Structures are given as C-alpha cells and as structure tokens.
Amino acid sequence: MTQTDSTPNARVIALPSEEATAALARRLAAALAPGDLVALRGDLGAGKSALCRALIRAVTEEDAEVPSPTFTLVQTYDTDIGPVWHFDLYRLSGPDEVTELGWDEARAEAVLLVEWPDRLGPLLPADRLDVAMSFAGPTERRATLTGHGAWESRLTTLDLSGLGLSGLEGP
Image (cartoon, rainbow, N blue to C red):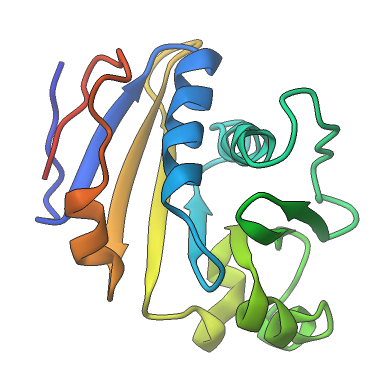
C-alpha cells in the first residue's frame, strides 16, 4: 500500500524483507558524499543497523565485515565514496560525549551514519537525511525518509524507482 507522511518532503517505503532494506541502502549509498549525515531513528530491532550494514557493504565489499558499533560507539570505513563513520549513540548521555569520539573530524571529512541521533542535541546538523525505521509486521519494516536543509531538494530528486519495493512513493 502506498503511504504518505504528514511532512511534505517525506517518502515512505515499505520494506517487506531484509533484501528490500539492502536495496534501499544501495540506492541511498549512491547518493551520498562526504559531509552528508544520515540520522537513523526507530525502536530496537527496527532495522537501523541492517540498513547501515547494507549501505556500508554497498560502498566497500559485498561480504565486508560490518559489526554494529553498539559497544565501540563508532566504526570507521574507507569506502568508494570516501570515509564513512557509523555511530551508535544509544549508550551516550549527551552531546559532550559525542565530541570525544572525533565528531568534528568526522563532520569535516566523512559520510556519517548516526543511530540514535537524539543524543546529538545541538550537534545535530540542519542539513541531514532522517530515516525513521518502524515495524510494519513480523518481518516487514517501513522506512520514512525526510530531508532537512539541503536534503529537502535532494530527497525529491533521489531516484528510488525500480527497486521493486511495494509502497514506494515519491514526494
């Protein structure tokens, strides 16, 4: 079923399987460049890490080891699109702890994938792509993509067609 979000610049995508999540990740990876931030929101188990893992594999190697940064807090990767820093801020209490992880360096040179971005507080940039992952069934997920700042127009031009995903809708 095609869905819309109350936000005019949101795109809602049904993800019936993990392969559908990986297909979305590959398409997003093709649109990213150093300086971009993808903020991933959603409950535990909603698919944030699966989307990040697939995105990182899309710009490195298909069988690359991509551990969750739940305990290391950040993992870095040299990729085809430049450095990618994958942050999992779940265990942090606030922005001051994020700066200790090399936040300023990462913002200057890398693509950032940030799980639990609410922990960034005022460090959360205005230019970003929000991806809200939610449960749509026992094995299905839903991704709501919302562009902020420069990402508002970038999201409208992002080609998500032809992925074979039900529920894919343009803005």
